[in-house]
Amino acid sequence: MNAKTTATTALAPAVWGTTYLVTTQLLPAGHPMFAGLMRALPAGLVALAITRQLPRGIWWGRALVLGALNIGAFFPLLFLAAERLPGGVAATLGATQPIIVAFLAVAVLGERLSAWRLLWGLAGVAGVGLVVLGPAAALDAAGIAAGLAGAAAMGLGVTLTKRWGRPEGIKPMAYAGWQLTAGGLVLLAPVAVTEGVPGRVDAAAVGGYLWLGLVGGLLAYTIWFSGLWKLPVTATALLGLLSPLVAATAGALVLGQTLSATQLAGFALALSALLAGQLTPRPAAAGTSGGGAPDERGESTLGDLLAAQLPQHQIRR
Image (tube, rainbow, N blue to C red; front, side):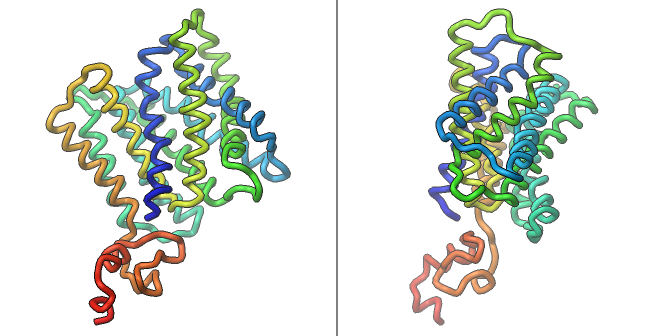
């Protein structure tokens, strides 16, 4: 496990975890998709203006596909799920993304199914459920379909990002800008048809939109894609469990909400799943040449980490 890269990449879903608090406390009510648009399009245009790097050739189409999956389709489905379901149910459905990515990695990337990460993905969903689900949680078929489709859309976008990589010489911010711009353009029509522009935007709302766009959009997606190219795709997806955990923590700290013993247990389970999913427990001999070096994909296995703690003469015995 590349601890530094993992910790840096985890900042992105941690920042995304503040979205609920910012949306409910600072932004005009009844315009969630407009908030999604403001999170994507302005930030994408700023990134393009800073980097001055545009897609070339096949990357025009790829940027549109990735932007539509990661942002343009994901946001409306997320908001539909949130509208039709209690927030806890929607968050739990979103937490299924690592499980979806585990199977997509087999189909799209040709990787072997990682039972280890699949099981920890299931544990992560259970942990998030304990944190956010209440006794009055209701189910709605359309909301459940939207929540799962949203997780699948971003899961496929993440997997294709890993498969297609990044054009040589393109900065991570430019790459993020392509997708934010494309996703924002995809959102223009739905926003115009369903919501329009809020009638009143005060100073607090301006601050909220700036946070969502510059920090939650430009900075977070630049960090996210940069880490995704360096880390295993399913392990990276597991970092997304931080979003509902940060949301619950922010609610407790800022809004005075309390966490029960069950919620704290779920918090610990989800966090354990996130951390354990960064390891790959395989025999050291299967992926290394000895001495605790990373395997051919750059991942440190559990065997590697244990071997690295033993004196060399004990390993030779």
